[in-house]
Image 1 (cartoon, rainbow, N blue to C red):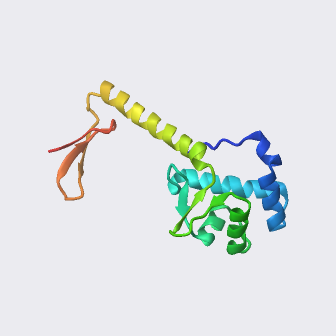
Image 2: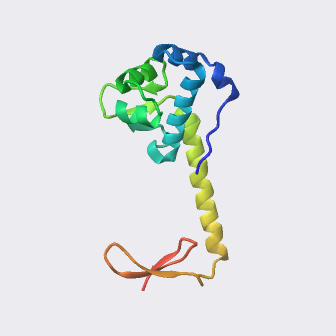
Image 3: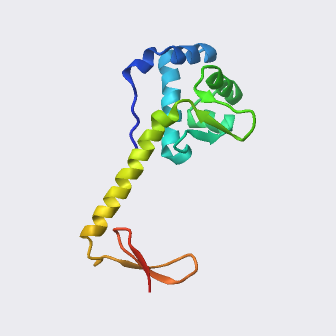
Length: 149
């Protein structure tokens, strides 16, 4: 589970109002669609720079938008929530690297830090036997240490 930071000024941001106008929906609904999209992106569907697949249907579904997916996609581009590029099969969530990407980097740092701390304290008493992709036996500890047997 991840947390998403929502700026209190977002509900009155002109881009949200523009999106609501483009889609002929109310502002709370437009805001909800964007929160759904950003939450989906944080669930490892976007990289640290905010690139996601250029798929109007998937973007609309991730945003919980039930109308025409192409209309929704074009509205996101027009209102500058998505950055597009001439070539390629990806689009970029606008300013993602400053917000969601920074959050993702912090989570990865925290995960790595905790893993290192667990390794420092662990005596590997709870290691379990598993098989790797090649079928070879290995021991895996809850602290993240693995070794071949």
